[in-house]
Image (cartoon, rainbow, N blue to C red):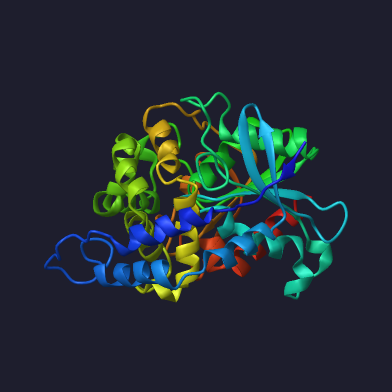
Length: 376
């Protein structure tokens, strides 16, 4: 049985947040400019000031609580999810899984476009039912109580879709951490998953370097370069998450700095955060993490992966679509994806980045709809 799910932040918690923000102890200025050494201090101070004195959480809380949200207990996990029913009967359901540092909220516009295409100039017969669960340890869904988890996330999703919502067949989509969950879901349940749509792909469990094409070698080189330049966050979250979590759980300015840097760097923003993200979007995401105290627990998937606590992805045999956005963390070529997946559809997008559901919901929706219409 599902139950209604609502957010309510007590007034004293809102006041505590404002006081922490107003009394932020700022580090000494570095002799660097803008975003060169991390989050731009000037931009961060502006956002902190807005968060403390101009941002209205209650309006966003009300909007979040107006979403079609539910909560369900599955094997000891309390799963928060949104359900957007298709505007036509018999539509294929698709489970949409977010990544990091994201939340269920990032997927709302995509879910609306999938479920009610007529509101966006599309045809009702192209509608899908969209299910948007919050990852364990992220805003909405508390972390699972055991390490490693007694039931892995992809199995929780299958039980949600098949056992509790009654869908015999369904599709799945994800990017970043959500792509990993979606890949494992497709591997584990080909009898139920009609296909998977991914914004990132897993590396094959093994390969002969002599078989690499020049395109694949260039891709692997670019990944190594990116990890050396920008992958420090992942290494820390993978190896020492609780050390990092103490400081971020105590400092809202720290949470905001940690997240805003990624929004700017990983998006098609041309180096300007506001080109892709409004202040209210950034502050609402940061508020969700802060008020649910989930920034530290959102690091758990990295730690579990680094410690070998997660299942191994061997081969995904269900039809797979890969959508590559030019400003995402990496752009895997089709041949690389085909080493692990049954790639039936591959798209290089003209614009957009890591947060595609927010940055380019129309492009992503069109690609999803095209792929899954063929599998209904």
